[in-house]
Image (cartoon, rainbow, N blue to C red; front, side):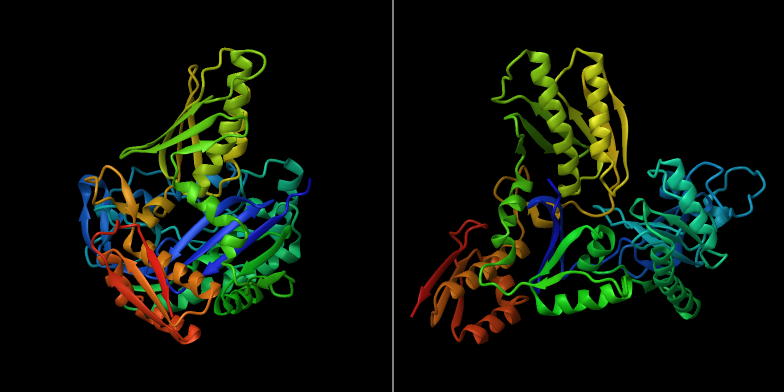
Length: 505
C-alpha cells in the first residue's frame, strides 16, 4: 500500500497548528502561538554582559530581556550537530585549515565584557535559564545546511550508501559558493540532482548575504535574521516530492505560503488547496481526536498492549506492558511482539509530543538475546526518522533503554497546558490562551449550525478576561460576519476548562 503523505495547516489569529499525516495517521504535530517569539534558529548581534570562568560561559544581551548564555565550546569547537552529520577526516571536500595544537581555550581568553558577537539561538529559555547560543551559525535549506563560519563541505552521516555519498560529493565540488562558508547535504538530498542543490544554494546564499549586510551595520542588541513562521518551517523541513497535498484553511496563510514556495522551490508545482468548508479542517480530517490523545499518559498498541508516558522533572519515563494482550504461543513471543510495536510507537510519540532531554524506556523483559538485538534494531530504525538528534545510550539485559533527544523548544504539552491551580501543581489544565481559543472555536461552530441574533458565552473569569481584552478583535470580527451579538459572561463556579455556549434569538 502506497503511503499518502499530507500536510494540514490551520491558521487562526491566535495560533497556527500544523499536522503531517501518512495515510491519515498523525506523524508530526506542531503548534505556535501568535504571542510566541520565534527564537530557535534566529540570529542576533549581541553584546557580552559578563564572563563567568567558573562555568566556562559568557552571558550575552540579545535584546530579549533575559540574557542568553554562550559556552566556550560553542565558540572555539565545532558545533556538536556538525560533528554528528559530518563524516570523519575524509568527509570534507574543502576543509578549513587546521589550527595548530593548543591547550583548551578558556572563556575569558575568547570573550571580553562589552564585546560584540554574532550568535544563533539553539535552545529556547527553560525556567530560569536564558536561551542557549552558539557562534556556529547554520541555516537549513531543503536539501542542504549552510554553515556561515565553517568552510567544510560534507555529507550527512545518515546517508550510508558509499555510491550515493560519492555521487553527492561530486555535486558538492561543482557548486559555486563562498569560500568563507560551508555546506552539508542533508538526508533529504538522497537521489537529488545538481539542479535541486543549485536551487538550494541560491536560496541559502540570499539569506547568508542578508545576514552579513545587516550584521555589518547594525548596533547590538538586534535580531539580524528571524527564523520563519511555523508553516514555512514545516514546509521547508517536511515537504517532499511525494507529499500528496498541502491544505490550508486561511486565505492569508495560503497566499503567504504560496509566495514562500515560489522563493524556496521556484518552478516546482506543488498541490496546495485552500480549505473553505463549513466544518473545521482538523475536525473534518479526524485530527482533533488524534491531537487530544497526545496529552493522554496511556497509548494503546495494535496488539492490545500499551505504553505509559510519564514526564518527570529530570527525565521522561516510559513503561511498556502487555495489558490485555496474552498472545497465542508463549510469554517470550508475546513480550517480543509487544516490545517491537512499542519501540515504533515510542519513537512516534517522542516526535509528536516533542519530548526532549533524557528518556528511559522500560520494555517487557526478553530472555532470548536474539530478540533483544532485534528490538534494539527496530528502535534505532524508528528513531532514525526523527529530525531531532537522538542518541541511544544503552540497552540493558533487563530491556531498559536509555536515550537522549535534542531539546530546542518547549514540548507540545507545556505549550498547551499550565500548572493546575486545583491540585497544587500535581497535575495540569489547559492554559488561558488555549481555553480562549477553544471558546472562540465553539462560538464559530454554533454560528455555522444555525443563525442566532445573540450568543452567550459562559466561561471561567480568567478566560473571560482574555476574550474581552486580547481576543476582543476576533470576537468583533465574528459578530460582523454573522450579524449577531456575542456576550462573554464570567462565571466563577465554572471549572477552568468548562465552556457553555447558549444561543438566543
